[in-house]
Figure 1 (cartoon, rainbow, N blue to C red):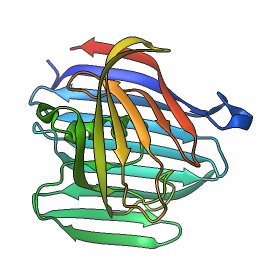
Figure 2: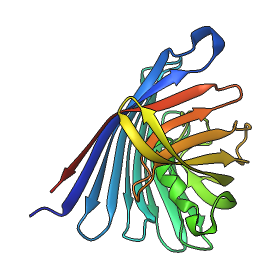
Figure 3: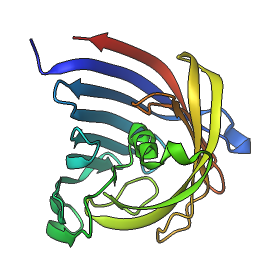
Amino acid sequence: MTGVVRSITGTLQYTSNQAHRAGAERGRESFRLDVHRDGSRVLAAHCEIDDAPAVVRDVNLRLDADNLPRECFVRIAVGGQFRGSGWFSFAADEAQCESTTTIEGRISQRFPLQAPLQAFGNHAIVNDGYAMSLYDLSKGPGKQSFFMLLSSPDHRGATGPMIYPVSLAIEYVGDEEIEVIAGRFKARHFRILDVGMPEEHPDYDLWVSADEHYIVLRATVTGYMQTAYELTRYDVAEH
């Protein structure tokens, strides 16, 4: 008997909403979520952005039984060349990063925490969906503010990886039933607002599965980005 009781695998398609290339594919993502017998989870993803300079990212995030991040690995290539890789660890009072990049060189960071970190952003789209679990649904639709750490302040996650603190707000719009390439799903609609990054981040809408897994079903980013994401395959295996 293995330690994994359920595995969810799938793929996401990245497309453009820009007028001159509406619907054109601009990237893709494959992911795997393993739920372990002790309640912990491991979320892994391989992400590709084709728009120059192309970005390839591999991430692996471990969450404890309380859904708190404990460690994460991030590796990125930009423009077809290795850019950096890093390991992040999260204790109750401190976050750590050990990484190597082709620009900054060897990096060792210690970041003090006032409370256990609730979410870590590694720029995988499926990871953005997991971050929506921060929202306290018992309070109903509305807007709540949060602090989290990122592996990069770049909107495409194409720098570092290294620790970057950020504040943001999550708006819970409500429940819907939506149709995507992978099928029809009950969804929760969230919106990310007021992201405190060096460059203003446009509003970001996400529709995630209406269960404890928060798998991204569809997402859109407005403003200058004009990007869209859609779940194209979804499989569940019980062990």
